[in-house]
Image (cartoon, rainbow, N blue to C red; front, side):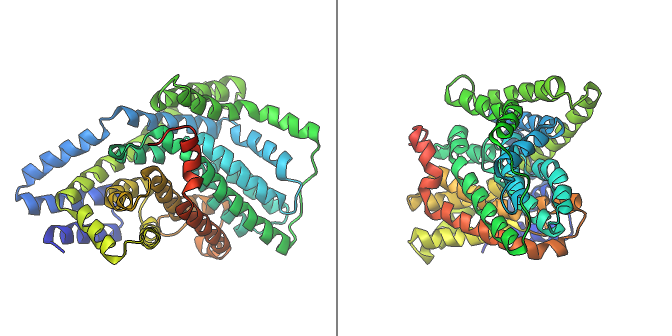
Amino acid sequence: MSVPVIILTISFIILLLLNVPIAVSIGLSTFFTGVYVMGSMTDTSDIIAQRMVNSINSFPLLAIPFFILAGLFMGKGGIARRLIDFAGALVGRFTGGLAYVNVLTCMLFGALSGSSVAAVSAVGGFMIPEMNRKGYDKNFNVAVSTTAATTGLMIPPSNIMIVYALVAAGYGVSIVAMFMAGILPGIVFGLLLMLVSGIISRKRNYGAGNKRGIVDIFRTFIGAIPSLLLIVIVLGGILGGIFTATEAAAIAVVYAFILAVFIYREVKIKEIPDILLQCGITTAVVMFLIATSSAMSWMMTTQNIPQNVSAALLSISGNKIIILLIINVLLLFVGTFMDMTPAVLIFTPIFLPVVVKLGIHPVHFGLIMIANLCIGLCTPPVGTCLFVGCGVGETTIVKVIRPLLPFFVAMIVALMLVTYIPQISMFIPNLLKLTN
């Protein structure tokens, strides 16, 4: 291992251990390595600054703040409650019905908002207290909400898919193909989480909800239609060639604004400045992560790290089953301490050349990576969904870990299915002829 690689790795780990924010850790470790390689702080600063600016000077990236803003309007606009009513009418009658309702609503809301944290807050904020009142164990309820919220990152539209598509654009990956590829994997994750919820509910004798008739199902469906139409408008418009993914994100904002302010009337005009401020803060964090991660990716490329890792992996085995297993284990480890965005930006250039050589489609690998890193959102020490879920459920991580274990198993099984059955990811993109 060369000296620059050692400096990059050790400095990054030390900064993380010192609780330095991850974007700053990435930027500083890249800077330290650049100073050693170039021998000049000025030259290093100039080049890193240029790389950071160029990485976010991208039209497709405009979709991210738009989707964030649309998600904020949805989170505050009463959409979660209407989706909960619809999901309750569909599956609430079964044993452990509220757990099913929780998972299904998180899938629907996460897909609409594109945010797992928003799903935990909006859906978990209602469902966890309701499940508590019905006699479900509090920590079980938090475990359901935390894991189910991640499914929305696979079901489009999803910001992390946009990030991956931009990094993998050189391999012919499009945002539309990623959006379509995520539908079935998201459903597979959701179904397996519902399966685990059902088994535990039967074992603990958690009761069913009220039986709802066809009329009630139809009524709740009508109430949820305006919310569900967003997916139809966004995906239908993109696939129909009416607008690009970035333009679709802007349309999503307009639609969500009209829905939250004028139709559902749950967002007041005076609340809009706060929503815009929150969107600006979140966007700044994401863009800073993208900028510093892109600088680190450039530094790793100059030091031939992707090529060396590729050669090392292929020297272990030429069997793609083994290689994918190794990559999944590494990503599962990375996901425990690194957020999804920097992980995708840093590790895609490292692993993608390896899997492409083995004949794995880059769109398929994108779903493998995203599905894998979703598990990290539920694990300490950096599990964002886990922290938010514990806050909403008024419990501690220590108490939730044991109830989470069966759901972790379900998510890993789902990950293995997505990894080794390419058709789960590729069926819809191939059907729509979105891939080469």
